[in-house]
Length: 172
Picture 1 (cartoon, rainbow, N blue to C red):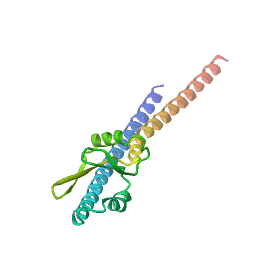
Picture 2 (picture 1 turned 90 degrees about the vertical axis):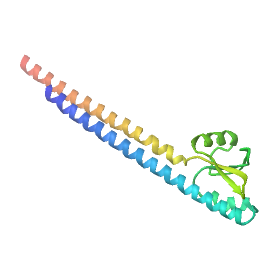
Picture 3 (picture 1 turned 90 degrees about the horizontal axis):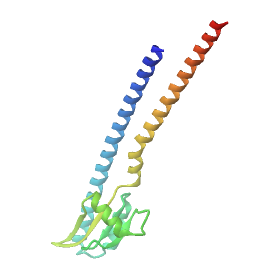
């Protein structure tokens, strides 16, 4: 019985070590992807703003469609008062004002200037794949724990069966 406890403790320790390692790797990778997405988006906004300023603010809708809508980040362009004007890459567009508030809480809005006048703001969130990446370690952890429980039950059942066979043999 002591051997079983030692083996199970070692397996449990390795299981938790693997689980913590995987969660750490996923967390770091997700954070790096989030930062890269943010940098790419801000770079595209700077290009958009440069084009907007060079064209005297005309054709902002065309620029929005050809530059901003080509990225995968969910984005809402608002006026100075944060009223939605354009949006891209959104799955639910029923209440854009709530999404603007949510995006403002996640990331600071990026102001769009023409000369020194604020034309509007870009409010953006993270792609839906990031939610999946953040949840994946938990799913993996549950799977590892389930495997450990099944393994524990199987080993325990085998040991009880052997003990019962031994007792039955001794009783004869």
